[in-house]
Image 1 (tube, rainbow, N blue to C red):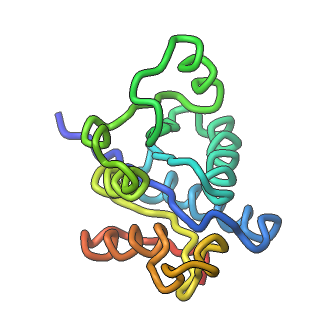
Image 2: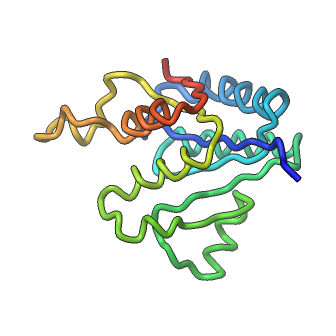
Length: 167
């Protein structure tokens, strides 16, 4: 039996300009995907204000649409205790660590984002062209791409349907 259920992932810059204005945009984008596109599974990473906002909105939507799933894709802690897993499951329905990340080193967050994009039909993104992470502005790598830009380019290459709320 083939299912029509779809998957959406989130990624975005570590800092967001105005979460008060962005939150209703995230809510609408997610609800539209649930109601009109059959999305029932949402994949999250961590390490950004945008991830936290999306996790919060998904939890609110879960009260209205209890069938949706919130899955936290870990980039840290490949092996976790039952206590830590239970802690994580307070804000998500499932969590896993992709085995291919075990030897990813500094690229672990980039590889985790690729994992989420590969498993998704849709990507809700907070990406601003030209964004430079604060910690890179005063280094030799100030012209390097942000992790969000790398993920965005990858999602475009993989022909994912992208909802960019950072324009």
